[in-house]
Length: 203
Image 1 (cartoon, rainbow, N blue to C red):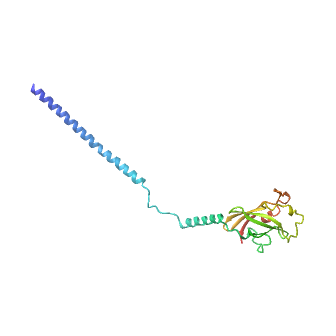
Image 2: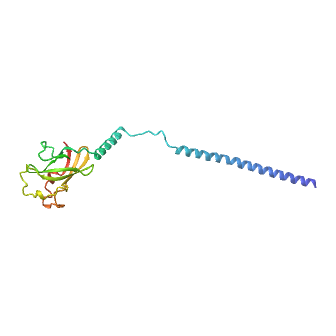
Image 3: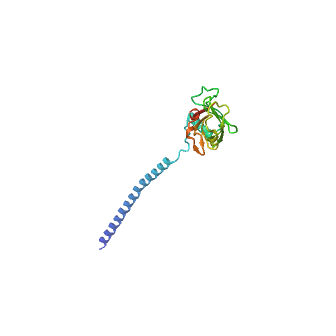
């Protein structure tokens, strides 16, 4: 009776020993995978770190171009338009017989409507930093033509033209025409358009 009991006890001890060995191997096999996971996380962290030592790769030419662009923008925002301008393509008119524009906010600048024949005195006022309005004041005393034009009927508070600053010493003049009682004077709409409208450069 004692022999079978001893054998059963030995068998139970052997089975317990095998189980402990299996658990130990299972625990050891998990360690490499956890180490692998840690390595992956470290790699991700290193990859996503910002490059704090990055240098500005702009070339001197690009820097100068940006500075010139900013200077032109500043000139457009705060233009100093006063002065004498000559119409592009009419640079031969050195004596300013007709194709010059004198921007003056305090006087009565003269505009040439038709070369050597019809001139008017005007008033100039800024609409905003980029745009200047031109208003009709009176016909010039040196006119040799235009006596049949109804000067006294033309509006003096409606712009006949606008000047827009382009920066870099250039402007555009857009001819609007004379008005009578707020309406465009159709018969005289293009008077002055040919000689005045266009691009000008500072003289």
